[in-house]
Amino acid sequence: MTAAEPAVDMAGVAKSFSGHRALEHVDLSIPTGTVLGLLGPNGAGKTTLVRILTTLLQPDAGHASVLGHDVVTESAQVRQHIGVSGQYAAVDVNLTGFENLWMVGRLYGLGRSGAAARARELLDQFRLSDVAERAVKTYSGGMTRRLDLAGALVARPRVVVLDEPTTGLDPRSRMDTWSLVRDLVSDGAAVLLTTQYLEEADQLADSIVVLNQGRVVERGTSDELKSRAGQECLEVSADIEHLDDLKDAMTLIGDGRPVVETHLCRARVSVRDRRADVSALLKLLEERDIPVLDLSLRRPTLDDVFLELTESAQTEGPSA
Ligand SMILES: Nc1ncnc2c1ncn2[C@@H]1O[C@H](COP(=O)(O)OP(=O)(O)OP(=O)(O)O)[C@@H](O)[C@H]1O
Ligand SMILES: [Mg+2]
Image (cartoon, rainbow, N blue to C red; front, side, top):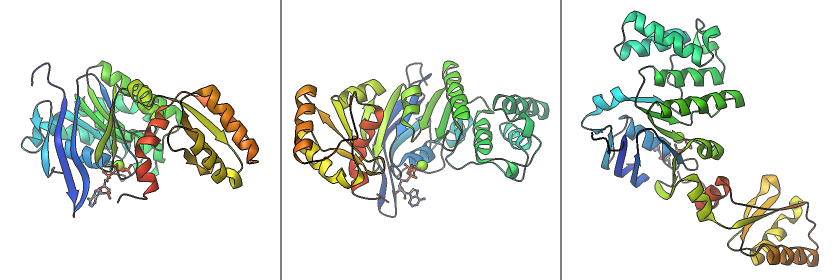
């Protein structure tokens, strides 16, 4: 691998499961010392991509490499350099936290005392020292998640793959994980992070790839994605019984189709001319006797970008 070569490189990667295309011609690369945020709705193909990169699954087509090693033909070298924390924790629940980490250290070739020292260090870093000698089956979900994450870092890997690392963590543990990812990156690791929390991608990712139904539908920095979504957004709340009428009115005024969040009794749409569009909408709502509970104008967030890009998957039902 040369200095200019990215730590992770994927080109044209495809994977199908009994005729269902989980990934279609996916390209991505992660330079050393950066975080790539992989976003996508349930079933988009994120875990499939993670499994290919970590050598657990072979692609049907395309190439993927980690630090210059091909994931298919040089899987042993890839595994040596990569740390993985999966969506489903890979810890042995009958062992203690210490034993789990110690075993991982031994698997990576550390000596008995070296593995023990590294396990203690990580247990401390992940605030698990107090429960180190307890069987993992007595841990809470968040503790198990943290232990799994610690396991990924035992061998100080140069490439770290985190599949939804903060799902199920409380806010403090989530922030701890974020600062840990920042430390990893400042030490020169390349990180692939999948997440459903767009704020997480916003905070951590140097670049973002959005997958939908196995295809890359958008890529760029968080700022680029937001500015591509571009326009200001008009957001209006109404009683549930007026939500359909509100959507109709917003369809007439806005630029593009409104996105309705039924559970929040809220609809939003992009607008081109804030003053004219807001007053036109208010007039229309007045005429149609639709009471407004709340109205705001704001710049697009990463959530807006995501909803817009992946809306087809939501309206067409599950892709699986
Ligand atoms: N081993 C498998 N056999 C058959 N289908 C599979 C298998 N693994 C994944 N799939 C299918 O491939 C698609 C992508 O799944 P994947 O787990 O990669 O999605 P994801 O983006 O990780 O979703 P989530 O956000 O729910 O974790 C889904 O339609 C899924 O049903
Ligand atoms: Mg997944």
